[in-house]
Length: 418
Image (cartoon, rainbow, N blue to C red):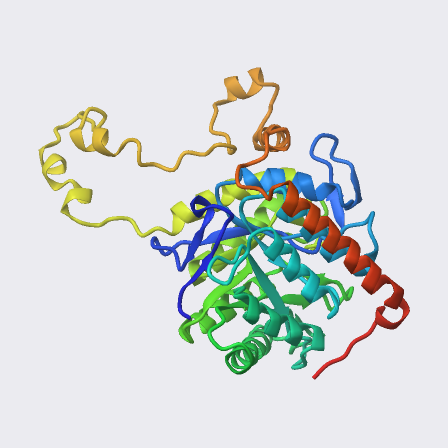
């Protein structure tokens, strides 16, 4: 399919791709095991209770079209994905994505979203399916592809090569690895799950040759992501890549600079989905404050990539020809007609120095923190699973633990590939 609908629990939350305005949607960061508390700024491990915070914040972010689950402590690591999805699906009316951690988990993840109301006609979740670079595919991901197809869930065909490690060190070689693996997954989907909507998802990294660290937002990674997106679009695929994120561990100036450059690079390349909202430290940490800033940055970028009108009306020839010396356009009919069409930030600040000093030098970070705390305290959205559905989801989570945890010695560390 050339189009896909990422359904919410109510039609108002549905996301149609590609967008009619040729823009993008955003999603929250996935897989983070660290959490930065929005009120104190304290870093700690991600707890299962933090899923509710992520959902509450993301529910109120207009640019975020769907929500990913983190890796959580407080539950067994082998079923952390199942418990995180069980928490998330009962706390948001937006679309979510599923990221299985073991082959045994796939069935339980799908059962949970079906208990929450997902159907093949209106899938409220989509599934990430990953390659195992270079050029391998885990049995878990092939099983996820097959079961997603049966359940009618769209698939994010994801390649995560690291230049210099699991892909050639060059930008072109890194992009080639991702594109090749994604095409292979598209082919598998056509054979194993015909008709399944597949979104090409190149998530590239670059190894720092001095330290061995995988870098998310270095120039080489940015170029590789944009190049892979452009190539996949030329092949007719919807595309999804990191559009937010940084390699710094905190919400700071470096973080904003890196994610602004990353977002602009892939947005201009034409990506349909910009992932990574709220993530820090190479996608290992989630910050609600950063998520609010990313939502603002996403709105800015969507305004930036819109092509301006260039016609007689926009050029305003008549008034330009007639304006006299010392005149202005403040009272122009053209100005009055368009004065409310500008991008206006909610979080970014445009105050003058005097007002800034009077406000105690509170800037965008402080505004984002206040907004994050406001969203955390907001009432839940409508259309959440009812009490019966929540009991069924709890029973599925318990059944998953009973089935999977006794096998932990056999499952832990297993890597079966094809």
